[in-house]
Image (cartoon, rainbow, N blue to C red):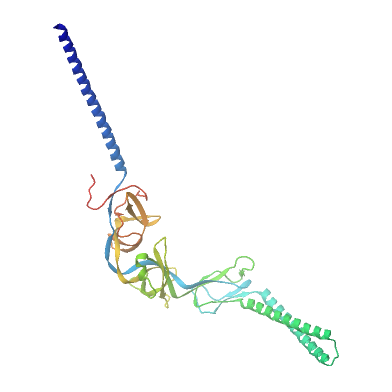
Length: 386
């Protein structure tokens, strides 16, 4: 009876010890797993916090509009530099900047005594050739008369005829040479090629004039025709069908508040620029009073044949950087910064004329550090993120 009792106690003690060991191991394993899960949760939360959450929304379609406002630079209808066609020294100028001139009007004179002397020499040479030609003609007539009387050889007659023909060619060459130098002398008088205004004078009396025969030519004056002006604008693709020749296009400038200058579309490039998705369009404006100045900035109000809805976004969506005006879009889970063209300003909202579509998701209030390709957590309107 004693031995079985001891054995039973031993087995009982061993069982409880194993059970305690098993319980302790289970507690340890559970603690380790909970710590691993907690570390994973902390890591994931840290990664999630590193990716900014951004509020996104689709652009809003504004009211129908009957015109689009586009920026443009005013240019002269015809603009040309004036160069000299002969070397020499400037003798006198007659027009300064701001002078209105007519086509063919004398604006400067160049003194070129070498060319004058060359013209005189060419004329003297031509006179000599003409005298020789006259003598050759007399000899030719004389030998032809003697030949008829059988009083000279055929060789003498041929020599006389050949001399006459050679002298005739020499006279023609001399006459051409005289015309050449007469043209050079005529170039001593610099005239306006068309009606316009002198916008630059780059020479003065006594200055050496180089016509480009030896070295680079020198621009003497710059002239612009401003009775009619050109304004080139880039029309967004969405409005390109309305930019056809003859469409009315008013022009406004900040220095003329409340005033519009009437113009119209003259021509287009008939091709959409693949980089900007815009159509290059020329608007012509009459400027008989000369109030509009070439080189000025203007806004062109292009009339649309059919009303088009405007794309409107909050001003908080705009990003102003050195690359230009941009808006951040969400494509997948990445940010994409695109350049846009600004239309009308409505205060808290602005009109976008090019760069985005109504289907795009735009970031309403993008972080200052946001860059293209950065990961983001988009939050559409009405969504809540746990």
